[in-house]
Image 1 (cartoon, helix red, strand yellow):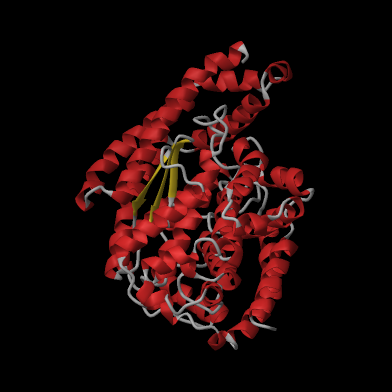
Image 2 (cartoon, helix red, strand yellow):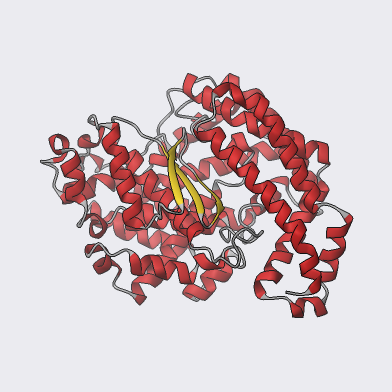
Length: 501
């Protein structure tokens, strides 16, 4: 470590501590905090956010960054340290552009807006959440304008917060290809949806048994309970303090067995990424996933490509049947596999099948673009949302809870996040194609041996954290940058076989 970097380290450590505290409040807010706490706790979150900003945005840090960017200093840094300086420079420019009073106010707002969203969703009352959403959008528009380069659209700035490798033009091409290739296939599949029965999924399933089985599933895949915990929240999510404290949540529905099962597999995929980040970079600015697209690739890989395969369920399906013999004793493994892969248009993104899933993302992507170009009015978003669902999926939400209010992301100001799910699905398919060339993936799954798969992902992707970006990792792992063809071909092959097309 260079002497200049040593001088910077105390500022980084202090900022990390405040960020950790802020994350703890977010965890508490979504899991165990009482409803009426939000308005008062938001003041604490605002102060912590302000102190975090002060740790990084000051003349001393700016001088150290400038010095560390010099060629001589760069040569003295390790590759991890160079990645930290690059990320710090980006973070500094972002935070410096935002007036401190606005930064604090925004963090206070998002501390209460998520609780407002949860209440609105529970009560099916979009009008209750709308005022919060208006304020969030106003802040995000202002923040984007502070940072936008000449001629750059505000929404493109926000996209870059989650995935630096892909801009609006890239995503438009990506989604156009998906629509062109998959919408026709979905229509063909929908005509044969009655050939797959999954009525068993909507029987009554004891919630305590669901909790037990989902805990078992997380451990089976590799979740380390000595370094992680599982709680419950309205919308499942993953949060990490560092690689030895990774937290996930789940949500349970009595008459939908699949919901919690695939949520916990999804979140465990996120958790494995965070747990496997190298000790050398955890608790630093690059101590998390390479991007949200890469992060979602790991959760989507485990949830769908691995978690919906017959090979994965072969060693463990009997355990699920034993938990619910009255519901599943006459449901064979092959019946179950066809059921969990059934494709048909549905309203809820998190419970959508693989084939229609990206259409849910395209809807959100198009609406977000309209919001930030001034084409969409907040008060009319429910109608816009419903029209998009009718256009793309041929179905219309009967209420706002299963429509505009179904996702938590906007309550935190996470505009630009949703495309990461589709990018992640495509990245997962590309990595999976490479894995099959390198190892007998199906045989490992049939043997109930997840370890070689988990270790490969750790060594090829996870341990690097955010020291590399999505395309750098893909290039090193697969020899190519992102190509949507792997995703399209994977889905075509899977669903043409499933439905005998």
